[in-house]
Length: 95
Image 1 (cartoon, rainbow, N blue to C red):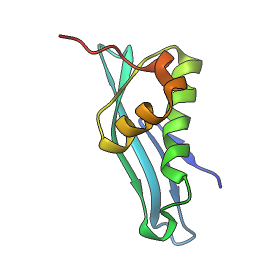
Image 2 (image 1 turned 90 degrees about the horizontal axis):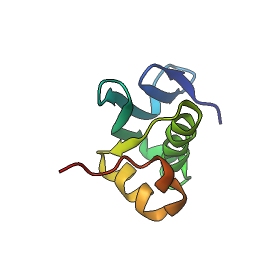
Image 3 (image 1 turned 120 degrees about the vertical axis):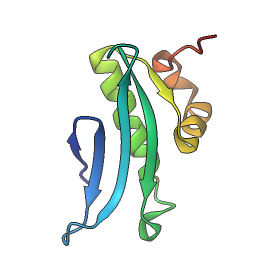
Image 4 (image 1 turned 135 degrees about the vertical axis):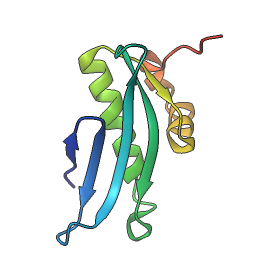
């Protein structure tokens, strides 16, 4: 399974260019960090771990590019709870 990327997005389309899976994120903190805003997986692919793979792509990119992640969407927040190994890229909560 291969994902495509563009700034602020990893995604996968089918042969007819229908969106099958996507994670979107944007730069925050003057570009120093990112916020995951949305995770989507088509119903035909749910339950196969695809959303988790999308979150891991953002986590791996954060590690490579040295930034932190604020998981705003509910799936991303739950992924950070389920995967304590992602703590190194979790953006600290600011008060």
